[in-house]
Amino acid sequence: MSAYYFKARKTFDFKPHPFAIGTIKGVPNGYEDNHFLLKIYSLKKAVFDDYYQYHLEYYLSGGNRSEKEFFSHIWHIVSDRIDYFKGQSPYSSKHPLYISNIRKLNEFQSFLSPLDKWNIRPNDMLIKEKDEEIAKLRLELEILRNKLTDLDKYEVSVKPMIQDEHLPTFIDLLQ
Image (cartoon, rainbow, N blue to C red; front, side, top):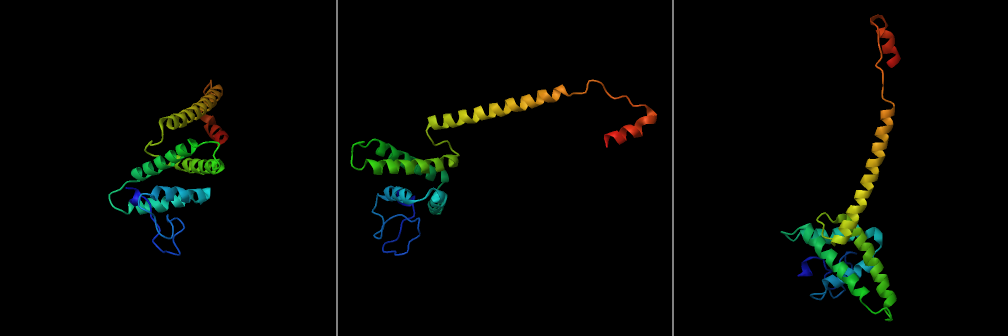
């Protein structure tokens, strides 16, 4: 199923695209997700977008497919792998590797979060993000209300009275 999500390296391709997944022998069937995640561990944060777009374009070129499905698949494999690493023994000799992988996958998830237009992320993350946005907007509203009340202090209490012969003088004052 996941074979069509990611663009795999061709067998015995000695100069593959840097974002193509797999080894020189290709990708064993059913291990595409693992190879996608292995590539993330070696990438810098700056190229996450290029990596994501590379595989998204490949996925969308396959026909009747949507970005929502792709994003959902990516989000779930990354979060499942984080959960897997967190479930490993903290006394294992590979614990530093697990921590490093968790850190890298969390960075990738942070990159993915703003791309979520469909609210696929867990509800607790969505609620926290929406609460932060509401708090920010309330603060902005309070600032604008204070500015508005400050302007009310300077409201004109008496309208200017202009006599017919002094109208040009008043216009000169305004200009």
